[in-house]
Image (cartoon, rainbow, N blue to C red):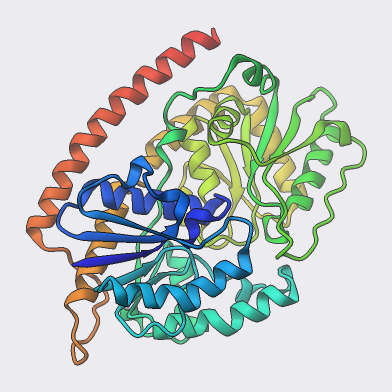
Length: 418
């Protein structure tokens, strides 16, 4: 089977969706020796070590990181031609958008339908384009993959898709958040101090305004608490504007913008807690990244978040500022609670493994590839037993190696902190 990868996401800024797509493709290529992969992307990816395998071809084309409209045209016009030229059996688009008029077998990842469920959070241009193109992409694709039951239910309800067309494959956590970080001492010193951490884009559905209001309520009602609030992420011009103005404690509300992966891991690891009061998520990676890094999490009881974090986090109504402030205070002041949450979070994260994700996606590849026009889709895709056993063996070996490195790193970091 020749699998084509729509690698437009590889030239985009790596936020949640792009990071997840990158980890998925990297893991697929790492473990799968049965199939051929052709990655259609920007020229700078040629020679990248993560794609250096005998069954992988990187087709570097005219994609540029800063030219979103041009890249969109490439995806719609140029990519289908390249897929036909390279005789692709299945074309996989892992980051929400795909070529609309591609006639071959195709799979698209649709992470959430927030622009449909809550259109007021998005700019007019963004929601108009997405409401035109995403339903058509979902209907034209051979199979849709999504990453939570909440998102699957939205796809079935709003796009009227048959249940057998949508496969659920949960995302996982980047290994870098479980491993020791490698940043210089100067930058480490800048991360010192007591702080509550938020990670994510600064857009309306993330409820940053509510978080800041709850933080100010916390500081006002509990004067002994001097913990700062650090926000990591950037605001996209695609989303409706967000007013993020702290008042009484504005000097302790710190916006960091985008940081490197190593710095982000260090911010997670040193945080007193991670607050993520989002109003809607298709999956919600930051709470799991926090748990992998050893930070307790306070997050929302809405959309997909409860099915992802389970009982390892404190769940709050994100619209209730008082409840959020009380939860922040409780975690900051109760050391036993913090320890139990860190332990529960570490156990919860083990369920979200990129090798398991790769197996789920490979099962969809096999179903789509073997399907004929008269053959119905299935609710549950299956991978051939011989391939499953091979992948499970690789997963067990690599997981054992990773766990050993992780434990050594945690011990080393603990000694440094002391």
